[in-house]
Length: 221
Ligand SMILES: [Fe+2]
Image 1 (cartoon, rainbow, N blue to C red):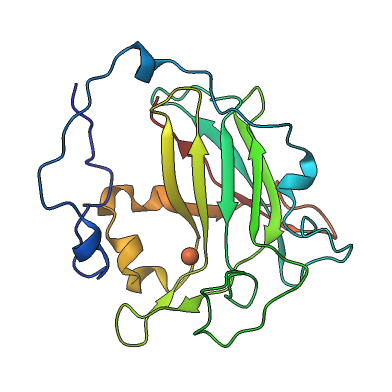
Image 2 (cartoon, protein in one colour):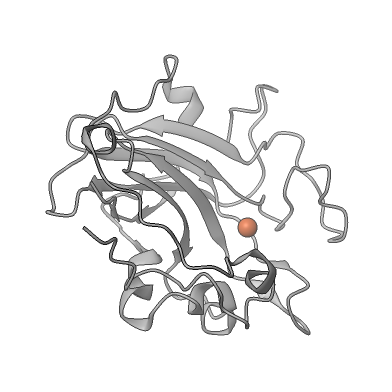
């Protein structure tokens, strides 16, 4: 069985410059799927608490992070639309100013927020639902081309119930004018780009607290 990559970006996409060096020069080897790849114990993690899914407070300083508080929620689904419970979702992102908490992040002179780590994790529940509280990330410049700015985005890593149910991707926000200019977003085939874009959902919005965004994720498996 061959992996269908028609919904995925090519490994080499010259407009996204670093793919030129990162992409393989030789043909990929298809790994034969055995029982090991089709089954698995699922992610082995220590207990996660709801605090791990709240990036506005998980820095542990006792003070809240600065920025537009948002809720991001949705379902993790398998290829056939069924829910995937106990899927580990880890996210990382820039702060409200577009700055990452990382020692190599030195070029963008935007402020750090001591109350924001920019990383969190959660497990999906029995219905495959995940939910994070976080700060809406700001756009940031990058050196890909002249005046290049990344749209607001959240990075995600998913580990599902099987060894091969694995996805690393990015979530974007509906209506962001930078999407059309972003080579990383545009590297994904046009027919599947909208799958990476979260929609504003007033049902998710909590009165007097936070705006809600909904985004479902299909994880092969
Ligand atoms: Fe990023």
